[in-house]
Every structure is written in structure tokens, then in C-alpha cells.
Image (cartoon, rainbow, N blue to C red):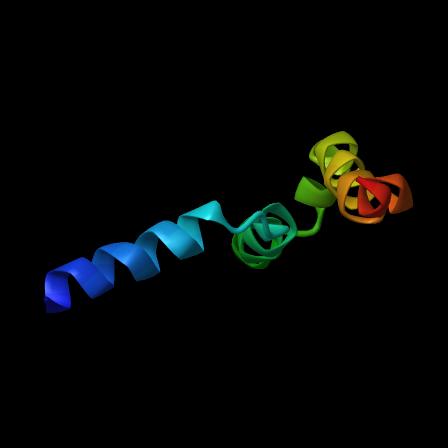
Length: 59
């Protein structure tokens, strides 16, 4: 039974659509330097736009 509950928890976490890219980018910047923000700025902006899009709340 515990395996089944774990699978449900993993599936639930996998189904969440959270903005992890910016967090991963912070880790990379702490290792490589702040210049990585400039490299990934278009993708970071795209993630920001997606999660701040108010029209998605209407659906």
C-alpha cells in the first residue's frame, strides 16, 4: 500500500506546473557567474510571462 501512496504523491508532484527554471538558473549562476542570466534571459522572460499571464485564470 505504501508504494501505491508514493506513486500518487510522485504523480501529483509531476503534474504540478511550477516555475523551476528560474530556481535552476539561480543555482547555475552561483556556480558559473551572473552572466548566465544574460544568456538565458529570453527563456526566463518566457517563464515569467507564462506564470504571470492573467488570461489563463479565466479558463
